[in-house]
Length: 240
Image 1 (cartoon, one colour):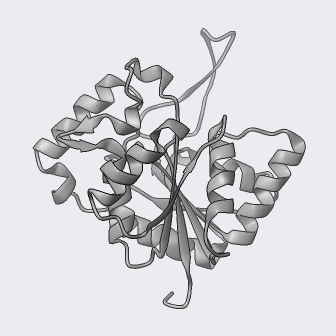
Image 2 (tube, helix red, strand yellow; image 1 turned 135 degrees about the horizontal axis):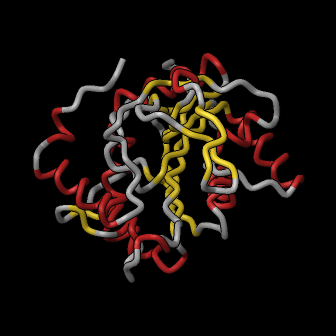
């Protein structure tokens, strides 16, 4: 793995409409530190990461430069760029902003602060082997498929179902092709794996951890505060 070069895109340009506050959720203070800083910190610590591009709202470029990157000395962050209308557009901007054609490109949500460095490294290694890999967790609950939104159609086989998370990592040429194909077709996916899948590439699942939560509501933020105050983040062991 030493010869492989890895670039990371932190997707933090979301509007955060569901969060219901004036401050975008990725910049909400979590125990005194902006939420997105936790995500960046994990990739800063990974020995397999060479460069980070931070994609943020245009009006937050200066804030991110001085209050996040310089304040916390994230020297792997080489560029801070404005995002696009959709997450997919922001990732494309991030990909085109990398300083080099890296072997592996990793995408991570700026509002997933509790990713483990061990999982990051595992996803990168599996992407180098299989071409693409995502972090995901097994379904715990029974899942029903509905019709007319209110009636059960059938019960889905739980052993086949996973909840996709980030990071998601791909060989540069695979991700580039997938993004270009989606753009050509006018397809908007909910994650990068969906773009890669529709191009016929197989994506390896890397088992993650349930604590790798995405902060989308105020209730999620309360959970995150409990994680930090209780020291859960530091004591968790990643799932093998």
